[in-house]
Structure formats: C-alpha cells, structure tokens
Image (cartoon, rainbow, N blue to C red):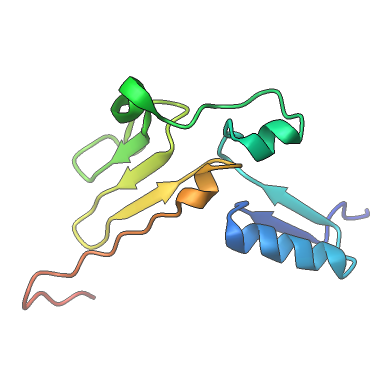
Length: 124
C-alpha cells in the first residue's frame, strides 16, 4: 500500500501554511487541512474561489463574529452560535482560549488569550 501523503498539516494559519510550503518545496507530498471557510477577501476572490463566507461586519458584526462558545457548565460540545462565525471561545477555570478559523482573512485575525491565575492559586 502506498501512502498518498508524506505529511498531513492541520491548520492553514501562518505556521501551517509556511510549514506546508517548505515541506512541499523540499519534495514532500503534503496535505494541508483547514476547518474554517474561505473568507470573502480580495486575495480569495482573485484566486477564483466561488464559495466564500463574509467577514463579520456592519450591523451583523456582533451576531456573526462567534462560531462556538464552550464552558464547563455547558453541554460537552458547547453552544453553536453561527456556523460561519470567525471565533471559537473555550472558557475554563484553568485556561481560556480564543481561536479563529477561516482562510483568506480569518487566519490574519490571530487571537490568543492568556489569563493570569488568581493570586496565590497553584496550578497543577
């Protein structure tokens, strides 16, 4: 059985896209996976990609910015807000994460959130 790919890269953000480029340039067969939709930006339109999701803007900004919200007191998969939303927010006692998704705009929004533990609180 022959492997179709030498490397599978998950995420087309800066790290994933640059890694994929250099691996392919070195001769590796690379599969780059991205869960987010193509965003409606000028570079994406210039590539001729027809199925595009708009970046949240205008009066829909606040209702379309969030894809999913999860927290310990919610169902395990969290609450789906908008399937084309740009951000997932995962809130927990020890760590909270804001994650963006999308190609051609969403990956340029890179977000990360670090919360300092409460004074005197020991993690581990």
